[in-house]
Length: 409
Image (cartoon, rainbow, N blue to C red):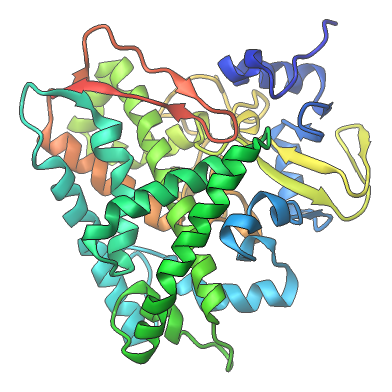
């Protein structure tokens, strides 16, 4: 057997899926020296790890906390349940569930209108025959602008949010721990938190129907959120909520336009919109892996993972496991071995939003943005196609998607 490449090598960066395929067959429990982590790559093993209490999120102390602050992702047990109960009602999104309380209902109504309003704002200037990068003009901006609108932050500051967001996302994807990337990310987080300080004070004094007001006035069993916790949730939403949607759109456009009959089929049958998004999340998840630190040794995949080991749950490999999905490396929104109805819930089988108790709070917001955005593009641009000579190319390892998507409408 030939030796396996390093996770952080150029070879893997060019085609991580070929590397993951080898791991599933040759080394489903593999220690990678370049990352200092064990890699779990099969669907059953990743599912087990998400459920197993020994797989803790202590790695977020250095991967996320310098930017987010101490977030829900790092909490467990009673503390996690209490804090999640304060926050989760505000992230169920787009009127898709019944919220309790007047503020909750108002925020849901604002979100419904917000996504559509921002979609129209971004798409309206585009004219027939125009060639442009749909990621730069639409996908990158939509989730950041939606979140800023939900927070009732000034539209004149939207570009500042984008600058902070890009610096913090680079920090979160920094598996090689580049010190300059680290420094810029921490500085952006500090500036954002300073920016939010007077806004939170004003919303506590005069709450409205925006999300910051809702978090500032939330109470469960006498518990409330302090300013630092609100800043953490806002920072986490701006980053995780934006990056997932942004990169999913990039991969979705790639899948639908490289074989354009797919785009035409979804345009003709809108019942395929959610399956098309769900299959994109399975085959090309925006977040390729999640880290965990073991509280104790665990027997898994025929070997022993030692206590205190860093483990990467390789979502992008588990989602392509041949033992779980038929024709697993092909894009097929007609497949019957994936529950599209559960794609944005903690029962999801593709792990793109995590799984179980740490399932992504922003999944329903992402669903709203992706669903509303794709419907609007199908309505407005029936002739949308890739620009002549353009081929989408995916980039990134921790977070992966096309870097550019040149199209003609």
